[in-house]
Image (cartoon, chains in turn yellow, cyan):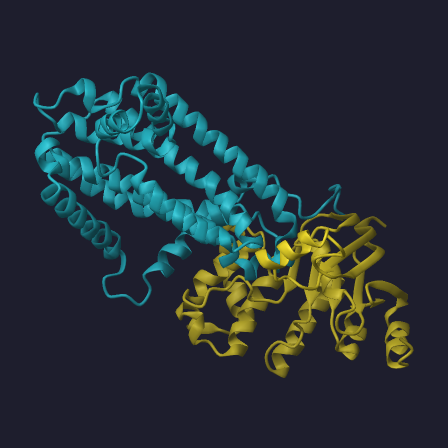
Length: 244
Length: 296
C-alpha cells in the first residue's frame, strides 16, 4: 500500500502570552534579557505517523491534547518547528465547515466561493452544483443570503460543499454533529461511502461511538505525544478505561 | 491508486499560486465588490460620490482660495488626474494591509495561497478606479484632449507603477500586521503623507523653487532628486503628462510642465523601484506566512 500521509517527528511550540508592549520589551532588555519574554508549551512533541491510502484513522484524546493541531499540520495551515509532513494527492478538510462562508452572500455565491476555497475548479462546481444543493436540502433558499439561514441550514450547506470537493485525503474535525438526526445519519453514510471508495480519512471527534463506526484505526494523543496506535475498538476501550 | 508524489503541504509558490487560482481570485474580488456597499441606497454610486466631493473640496480650497487656478492652466484636470491615481493607491494599500488579518478566520482553518487576499484588495481598488478614470476621460475630451501613443503609454505605465507598489507594500504590511497591529496605523500615516509627498495638489516646479529658496543649491538639488525618485511622484507626473498636458494651450510651457526626462529616465526608474518593492513584499510575506495560523 502507498502512503497517503507521512508525518516524521514533528514538534510545535506555542507561545502562551502574546501581549507585546514596548514597556515590557524595554524592561526585559534593561534586565539583561533574563528569561523568555513569553512562556511556551509543546502542542506537539516529536509526533510520527504514517497513514496508508484508503485508511480511515481517528485521532482521539482529551481537549488540548494536540489533535486539531496535528490536523492543521497535515492540511498545511501550520508548519512544524521541527520534522516534516508530506502528503500525496489533494488534501481537503471538513475543518470547521463554513469557515469560508460570507453571511451577506447568497447560498449560491457561497457554494462557489467555498468550493473554490476548498480547491475546486469552476467546471467542477458547475457540474456538482445540483448535487450539492440536493444533498444540503436547502432547496428554494439557495438564493437567499446565508445570514437568514438557520444554523442547521448553514451547516448543511457547508458540509454539502465540503463532501463534494472529492480530494484524495479527507480531514474531518468535529463536524459530525451537523444538523438534526436524519441529516447526521446522512452525513455519516456519506463519509462511510467516501471511506469505502478508497479515500483516506482522518477524523477528530469526541463522539467515541461514531468514531468506532466510521474508522478502523485509532490514534490517541496526550500532551502532544502519541500514546496509543492500534485498532479503533482498542483505542476506544483504552480511553473509556480512563487509563490516561 | 494515485501515482502523484508525496509533497509537503503548506509551502506555496507565492504570487505564482495566485495566477494558478484565478477562479478563486475572481470570486474573492466579486465578493468584496458585492459586500462593500451592502445595505446602502447609493450602492456603487459611492465610488463616484466620494472622489467627486473630495475633488470639489480641493478645487475650492486650493484652486479658488489659494489661487492655483490662476497659475495652472486647467487646474481642475491637473488636480483630478492626480487624485484618481492617489486614491487608487490609498484604497489598495489600506485594504491590502488589513486583508490578511481581516480574513484570519479562513487563514486559520484552510490552507490556500494567502497572497490572494492582498492581491484581491488591489484588484478591487482597480475596479473602483475605473469609473473615476472614465469621469476623467470625459472631462479631458471636453477640454480638447486628443490621446497619442505616448499619452496612452504613460497612463498605462503610471497605473502599473502604482499597482505594483500597492501590491508589494500591501504584502509587506499585510503580513507585518499579523504580528504587530501597529502596522495598519503606520500605513494610515503613510497614506496621508503619500497625498502630499507627490505633486497631486501642487506642481513640481513649486517643489523645485521652494527647495531652492529654503536650502543651499547643493542640498536643494539632492532633495529634488529624492522627491522625484518617489515612484508615486513619477506615476502622478505620468498621469499629468497623459491627461492634463495635452489639454493645455501655449500659455503653459511644455518644457517645465512635466519634469525633464520623464519618459526616458524617470519612467524606467519608477517601474524598476515598484518591481523591487513587489519582490521585497513577496519575500517578506513568504518568510512570515508560516506562522500566520498561530498568530492570528
